Length: 117
Ligand SMILES: [Zn+2]
Image (cartoon, rainbow, N blue to C red):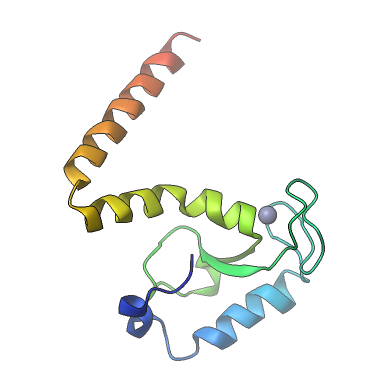
């Protein structure tokens, strides 16, 4: 997820170094979840892969421990952030209560379906 201007001050001063370490050195230039190579066409989407540093467990910008960061391709990063992005959009548009109600309903439905198997 791109850094929103209002959140920029919440990232540590050495964010660029942390991000580079994860994307370039630790990952070896490959998505840490699907293995897609940076700069190459993605094996599923065909888009040129651009690795970014994602917050995995704790999504707050200040949670920049290397254990909380992963080098991800656009596909994995977008899928990981999809829920947060949808909720953030709902917050900004003033419809977050509707969003949370729909999410709770979907979770209850999924839980009920799991009981069937
Ligand atoms: Zn990936």
